Length: 133
Image (cartoon, rainbow, N blue to C red; front, side):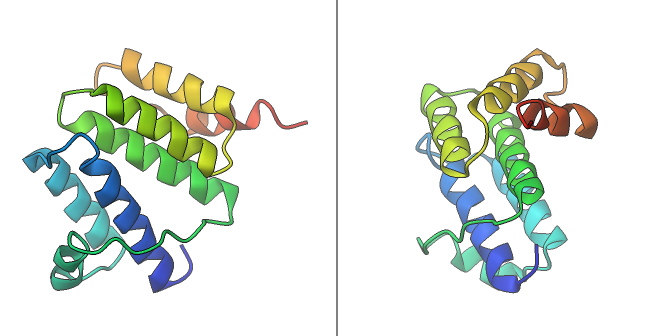
C-alpha cells in the first residue's frame, strides 16, 4: 500500500464486503478495526467509512491484490457463518481484481478445509502463481 487513499479504499472495500450478507457481526467489526489500525487509519475516519460508499481504487500490484483478496476471505470466515452471497461476492471481487480464477478457487477450498480458516503465505502465493508462464 503506497498512499493513504489506497489504504482508505482497501478498508472501504472490506467494509462493503463485510455487510454483503446484510449484517455486520462483532467479530467482523473487530477484524476490520484491526486491519484499519494496521493501515494507520484513525478511529473517526474508520467509523465514517461505514456511511460512505466511495469508489474503490484498483490495486496495481498483483501481490497486494492477492493479499487484499486473502484479507477479504479471512473476513468472510471470521463470523463463523458462510453465506452464499459472500461466496458469490468474493469470487466476483477476485475476478474484478484480475486474479486467476483457479487461484481463487484453490485458495477458498484450502481455507474451507483448514481448521482455523488460515493458510500459509507460501501456499497463497503459489495458488495464484501456478498459472503464470
